[in-house]
Image (cartoon, rainbow, N blue to C red; front, top):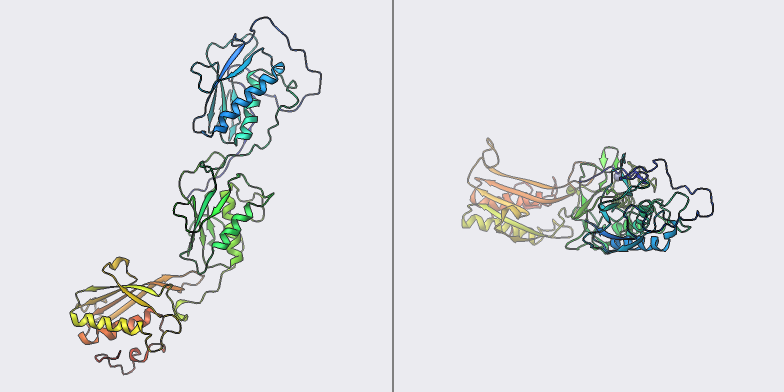
Length: 477
Ligand SMILES: [Zn+2]
């Protein structure tokens, strides 16, 4: 699971590569003065010795047509404002020109430009030229590709100002500002980010909570890094994001005391995700707490870090309220399904098979009022590893452990979804008869079926309660 620490120190480029630019230059508008008259020279007095510069684009991974258009518009801008340039040149946009004068290259991150380094990325890095210096090859304008096409157009326009040696203070009146340019979404595909919900382990339908959390981030005015919109499709077959509810999230995320409530990837501005991402949410909390955790984890997906707005939602810790959940042994029906698959293992004789069938049939027909509401139905399967209940009829007296000497044993597995260790519901049971009398196999299987359906002392059906039971008889009839 990714949980990256985001470092965004997007610095404005102030140094040029091919010559010395003034490293102290900033975007501050200088005192207004009438535009200095641009020197009109005869002939091409510029680094390229040419009146027309061919501008090509290499988008790299940034294939969105908007990234080509951003460069084309930036060149158009400077053709409209040519008077601001120190050079008398016209820019000719030719996306794939084979031998361009200027090539614009998109890269994901520009950490070094000229003699400067950035802990995040520069917006752009542009070749610049001293007076009288000439360019024999191709000038390069590098653009950081992590921003929306719209913001990139402003970045490109500003980068060309450096290429064209536009003096600080001589920028056109509509020279674009660039503060906090919007980032591209981490999801490269157009269209909404599809969110599915895996609520197998949840005790209730939690999809409405996921929908509310998604809607929270789509409100106007909420602070987030990306504009991706999310669509909840609980059963989507190929979602971008799975929200998975789990009984126990063991690492990362917001903590409540020693419990972790959830976990989600954090995308930095230059991260791209091409795979399915997972948000884990721990089950067993109230709707209110679960919603807060969902909102928090979706905040990470929107690029927000702990301590960032909106607070206190993005606090690293949160008070969450656990649901009181009755344990499986106290509820009327401790399984989550009434369709229970059963595999019979060992090498039971035909008679022992009938005994097993008799025990299963007894419970399917209600076990004389044992079930208060739901009653299971059993589907036989040959696939023991996928069966809910595995009944092993063994001739081995030690099948339930050495020194046990025969009889039977049983166990259940399930989920504990709350603070205590007791199981809230069962998902598997194993029943083993160990060299039991052939005609008591039904009783042994029946006894452990009662256990597997939550019977405690005093709750077993009368023929199975251990009080003068007719173990070898046809007690189920
Ligand atoms: Zn968090």
